[in-house]
Length: 143
Image (cartoon, rainbow, N blue to C red; front, side):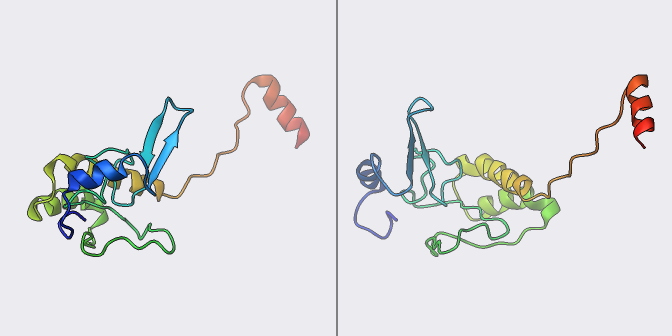
């Protein structure tokens, strides 16, 4: 955002820091502040991670997890399909080749891992096994 405007990204952060559309404040968790920005890798409200302030952003949207009606800025997002078995190496290689921020490389891999794990199908709960001699006798008597 800062490269298109005549305003520095530091000034944009200072203006938007106390209040913006992505800010989520939690008084119950000791005054924690989180961010719902789709370009924010860690969902923390800080200058380092906020995507709308920084010039270079590394945004991950695996398996089209954008919400309905959400329109991220097209000039900051590059869509790349990775092989599921090599997704972490692909993210690292892509960020190195595109000269993205090296300090967010580990966070990008962690975010991809969390998204992949959330997309897994959940296992069903197995039936409880009957344990002990008395319980087995009762189970046989019921059947």
